[in-house]
Amino acid sequence: MDPHLLRTFVTVARRASFSEAARELGYTQSAVSQQIAALEQDLGAPLLTRRPVAPTAAGERLLEHASPLLLRLDAARADVARMAAAPQHGLTLATSPTALGPAVLAALPPAGVTVRVLARAEIPAAVATGTADLGLVDGPAAPSDPLRLPDVAPLTTHGVAEEPVSVLLPAGHPLAGRPGLRLGDLADARWLDAPDAAFPLAALRAANGGGAFRPALRHEGTDLHTLTALAAAGHGLTLLPRSAATGVPGTIAVPLTTPRLVHRTELLHGGAPGAAAAEVVRRLVGGV
Image (cartoon, rainbow, N blue to C red; front, side, top):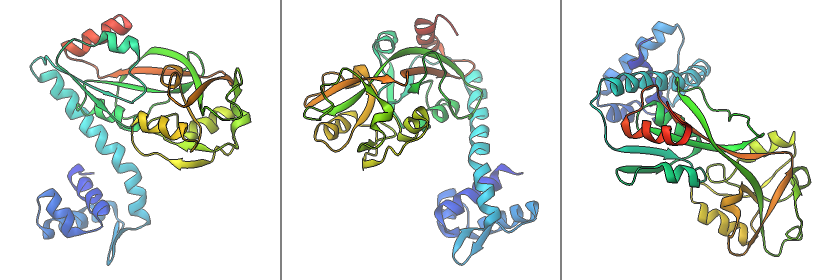
């Protein structure tokens, strides 16, 4: 399958327009139409309806395959380019908002670092495609268990930190005086749905073996300060690493006792990190 045709198909489906896709890709509309027709002929199935422009059932199935396929191609290109390029002196680190713990901060060089705070799902792709030299991902896990990461490319992962987790409650909450909380007892509470700043509610359901964990308010983005302000104002509970939950004005951080969960942070890199990235890896895990 020609990847150029596949990229054109994805763009047309995303923009729902042949003309808009042509402008984005720098082709004529006629060229885009010809590429879609060639892909449909290759696969032996119509992929898009024309009026309106929308994926057919076969097109929807192809879209499910297209993103990981194209990401793998971008990752392969970036990996080869990294090996062939001159040594880089700077360092770009992609991280989630709660992954920058004390050990990581201490391992960063004093200058030449760019930190990009991204949604958790975007970090492996950023490392795979070379837009970040290193990635830090985090999330809830059983002690010493690795995180489940998307298979976007052959990336190396290292566990670099684990810490307890706490439920962040407004100071006047009826449970604020408890010495510890069971996750199962909170399944029907009001929660903040903040998948890129706190632990995703889907992860809580998985850890608890089910339960509603209904969102009372959705927080989109990676701003941890806004998230904790919403919790302090009583808009919902959230689960955070202890270091992020402790000392937030207007809140109480109560340890989670059951199930046994930790906040785990993992470091990601490609096969041949540059000098600055390799030094950070050495400081955190003892080598590459």
